[in-house]
Each structure stands twice: as C-alpha cells, then as structure tokens.
Image 1 (cartoon, rainbow, N blue to C red):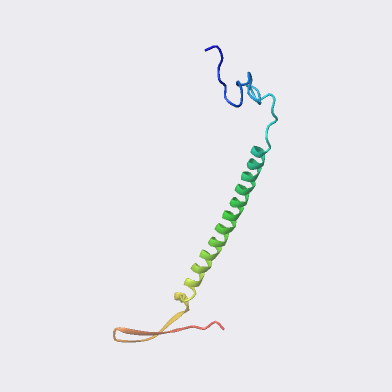
Image 2 (cartoon, rainbow, N blue to C red):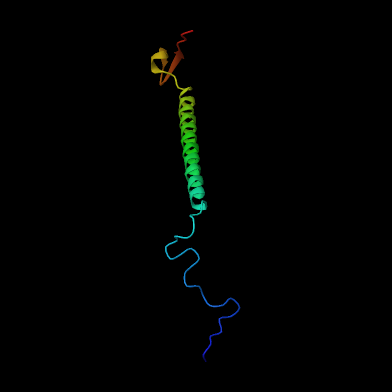
Length: 95
C-alpha cells in the first residue's frame, strides 16, 4: 500500500479556498443587505405600532365622550312638586 486512492477529485488542498482566516475572500454584501433590511423593517414596524396606538387612544377617548352625552348635569334639574314618594322634575334648557 504505497499509494492512496484520493478519488476523482485528487488529494485535498493544503489551504482552504478562502484561507484559514478568510484573508483570500472578500466579505459578502448579503450580511449587510439583510442587516439594512432588518433595520428598515423594524423602523417601519415601530411607526405602524405608534400610529395604531395613537388611533386606538383617540377612538377610546371618543367612545368615553359618547358614553357621557346622555348624562344630565344635576345643576340643570329643577324640582317642581312632590307627590308622595315620586318627584317630578324637568330639565332647564339653556337654548
């Protein structure tokens, strides 16, 4: 057994294609492109969340205001006469 059968590709190379410390290859732009894309998507997501939160807050406040429209202020009520246990009242109009 003096010879080694290396197969169809021959013996392995002494050094990897890009070198041991990647000194023979240029860095790929795919990492930086994906980093830029991730930052942009994160920024867009933050803006969408801020707008959605603002719209929800505005909607919630409007719902509270609509819920208060039916209430009558106690200063607008005037007692007229009392019949037993029941009291009649009327609403004073400011118009």
